[in-house]
Every structure is written in C-alpha cells, then in structure tokens.
Image 1 (cartoon, rainbow, N blue to C red):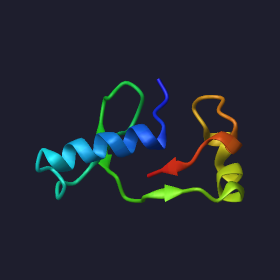
Image 2: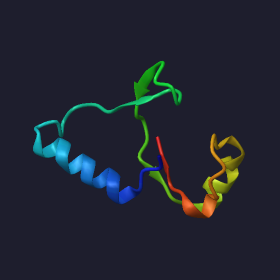
Image 3: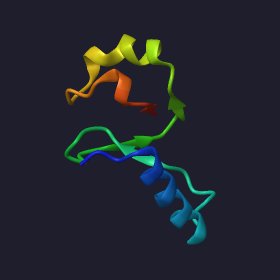
Image 4: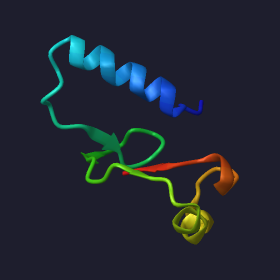
Amino acid sequence: MSITVKELLGACRKQVDKGNGDKVVLITSDDEGNAYHTLFCLFTDDIEDIKGVSDLFHDSNNPEDVVLLG
C-alpha cells in the first residue's frame, strides 16, 4: 500500500502527540521487514534527481508521482 505525504504527516503528528517526537526513526531495509536501519535523509522532491534513480524503484511508480524519503 502506498503512503502519501499527507498520511505520513498525520502519522508523525500522532507520534509527536504520544511523546515520541525526539525518538530516532528506523526504516525497513527490505519489503519483508528482515532488517531495519536509521533514516538518514529527509525528502527529495527534485524531479531530475528522482528520474536519475528511477531505475532503482522496486515498484513501477512514475517518477512524476513520487517524492523520495531516506
């Protein structure tokens, strides 16, 4: 299931409200949750940067329809 920026913002607000605002975010290293690593970077929304890595997309998303996180 794809998560939008708006959905991510809502989830972040809920975590801040729970008192988790200063905790470090870990993300999965694969789609099966076999490993986790620290989230190092925020959003990349430059379309040329996104197109430059679109051959690495796991799913067949259109580069025009995404921003990158991490």
